[in-house]
Amino acid sequence: MRANKSMQWMFLAAALQVLPSLAIAQQGEIHVGKVTGHADAGKQLYYRFCWGCHGFRGDGNGENGPYLNILPRNFVAATFKCRSTPTGTLPTDEDLYDSVGRGFTNSNMPAWISLTKQQRADMVAFIKTFSPRWKTDKSGDPINVPAEPAVTLDSIKHGKELFTKLECWKCHGQEGRGDGPSASTLTDSNDQPIRPYNFAAGSRFKCGTTNHDLYKIFMTGLDGTPMPSFADVIKPEDAWDLVHYLRTLQVTHKSPELALWMTTKEGAEIVKAQKIVGTPTGADIEQ
Amino acid sequence: MRTKQAFMAGVAILAAATMTSAVPGGGTVSGRVTYEGTPAKQKPIDMSKEPSCAKQYATPPPTETVVTGPNNALENVVVYISAGAPDEPPPSQAAVLAQKGCRYLPHVLAFQVNQELKITNEDQTSHNIHPLAKINREWNKSQPPGTPPFSEKYDKMEFIPVKCNVHPWMHGTFAVLKNSHYSISGNDGGFTLPNLPPGKYTVTAFHESYGDQTQEVSIADSETKNVNFVFKAKPY
Image (tube, rainbow over all chains, first blue to last red; front, side, top):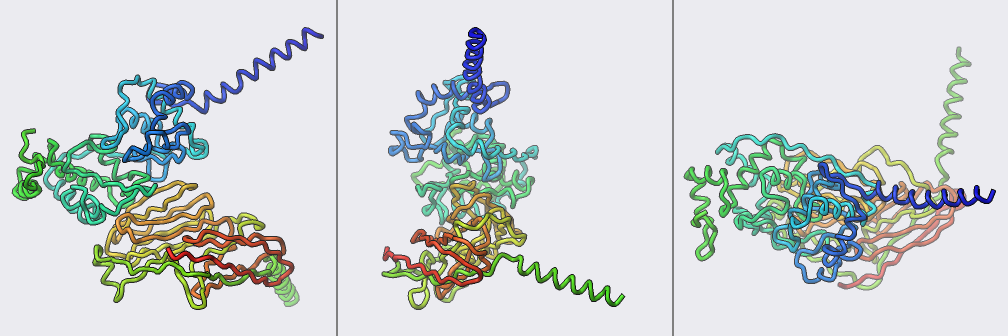
């Protein structure tokens, strides 16, 4: 009888130990390709590398926060700029994983390529524990990005028309320098001033470097910023034309689009006209 | 045959009678929303950066953060039953927000959880609709001129400030509410919440600049209770 009771106790104790860890394993796991990230491992990394800016509670109020111009992401609000998913939806695990590895140009977020893939996946699993949204909402379905058509002059010219028609220039400026009429008034969703992207500076985009990334940026929008989603108003084939034109605005960045655009009189004149005396635009810089 | 018809008609009348009496009670809460003190002076909006909108006005329209009427009436206050009434399924018709003359019409739009919200652009310029939701999901969509209306819905109660980033003077409010018992005060500050079954209710008044106030009300049978709200106006 006595032995029986102690057996029961042992069983209960074992069950109590196993059950919560099972629950945590299910909640705190993410999958990126073949890598499975674990929140418990990510927690160690977070409180070593991330919390100084993103805060003890993941709310973006780390001790470095006040000194940063672009505020660290608030993981509790769970609004993310770089997504493959429609505006207003949560990003995929892969989106977050890519952001950790890529870092954010023009901000203080470095590319964490010094960490292993496993470690980055673990971090993503952990930052997802900060917001209850991950329990109530599902990640959005990634938008469909059709295959990129060939770069042609017609495509670039049509893209230019769209840039005017969709009024991208209101914020990004006629020459894509981030100096449109509304640029100085822009604030993000935390009422912090924010600048539109300056194409002429030629730096990487907020959410990547490729044409594919550029396509996703204006189709999904950068949530939490003034950059809206154009998914409902641009057809996929038109979107690629816009991508091709936007590349020509990166006058300091060598691209097939810019090279082709420069072969035309119109293109060459426009790119040359962008040169402001005393300011290197790159149009005359050896690439 | 004739008796049968008469009988059917009688049944129909009876059914109609029971249906109308089945409509929950006839109690009403009504009253006025006013302010005391000096409200902030509303300045004319400078739309010179958007000529297609500016030319629609003979004189520039004022901002709408505080809109007042005669006898200290406070307009654009959402008065709603915040407790005591059950949550209701959304109505089938959509709540419509129009963007016209670079302003939101109406400035304050109230609708129910999961009700269709339809957004139209009647201007010759691109707007982006950016409701700064905190409880619901935040989204931000561009709507160039001539594009068809789009629809959205919210699944949680929230008061959401709405803005257009392209035209920084454009501000509005979405009031996403759990039931159909709401009213927005008009130019005389008046509101009416009809069809309230007998019971105890919490009535809340929300103003985008002055916050909210609540009052408790008990409704018996089909009486009409008068409830007034007074907001303290701030000059800045």
